Image (tube, rainbow, N blue to C red; front, side, top):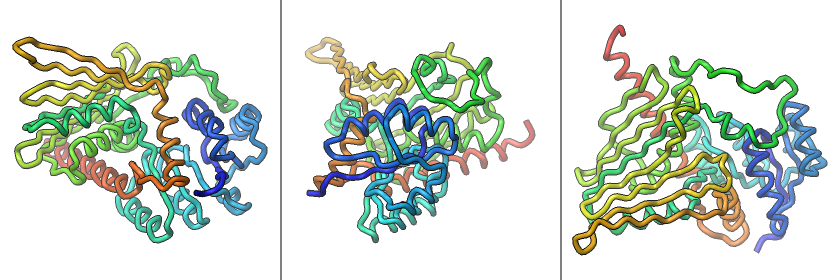
Length: 354
């Protein structure tokens, strides 16, 4: 068994403050947060004061040069390939928030590098660590098929879901007074719709189906690249579809669900906004039993999936458990997201002038 681990953290934004840092500090039995890194000086100082962390840096490379910790927790946004590679070069294990990176080539290279170095790179796939997801996966495994599996997400501008939370923000930050200009660019579709939002649906569908590299049969952008629709199949016995769309305001509500329809039952897994910390996911099953339609509803755990995934990460490092979301799996997801993007572009170009 490994001794108590030291942890460095890169990125101190909202999710870090709301979820990861409090959960890391709760695990004082297994780890100590040694240092934090954040580019914004006001956020860096405020977070350090709030969480009692003495060592602070504005450049992760400088942090890694000063006696790097055992573990790097990467919570910044965007492409993480450079930071993860720097951590592996420093001999660290890594927990990295999704996405691992934007390039499939980079993702596969990171997986190979981690394996060669004997290090763990675990990607933060929080939906996998909700007990309601486990329940849905078990139900699908019991079904003989065929199976219709649908992932649906309609995601509003989520500031209103987190505005009540006490978060240290940059000095020049102001609350949004109006909806931003959504969509209209391939960059938005790639970074916001696919690699920030639809990535949750992609990795959940991969785990639910066991299909690492789906054969896409139809992909299209939605509402001027505000969303994406995709369909894939597996031997005619499994039909999978995914729809993700961003909304301008909160008025549309937050919808994220997985629906599995079989010859025996319909299972619906509903996820709340991640910012609603005390609202669990819910799995509802409808089936005929002795001529009667019976509905059963099961809530997920009240334990935050963000805490559950960090607990799992430490179990991987300390107890030798197999990692449930390693870089190898994330590389397949990065590849799938890029293939969806390419297919959406091809379809858009084939439609000609709009």
